[in-house]
Image 1 (cartoon, rainbow, N blue to C red):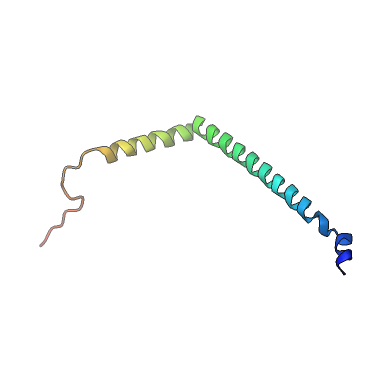
Image 2: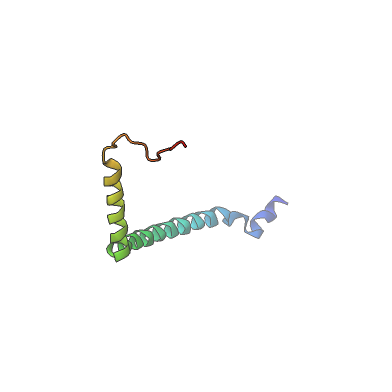
Length: 77
């Protein structure tokens, strides 16, 4: 029975795995390049510039010193 294993492509599994691994690696590389390009395009767009300005404004606001007053003021009565 063992001699028929090679007749059905049993010996090519290692080769097939290596080809699949290389194809996956190449696909991941292309996907990373495409994501980087999309990120650059977004940063250059008006929406990207607005988002960056908003993030900068939020960072400045959170870095501002707190006055010590509570945000919510409770009133009894």
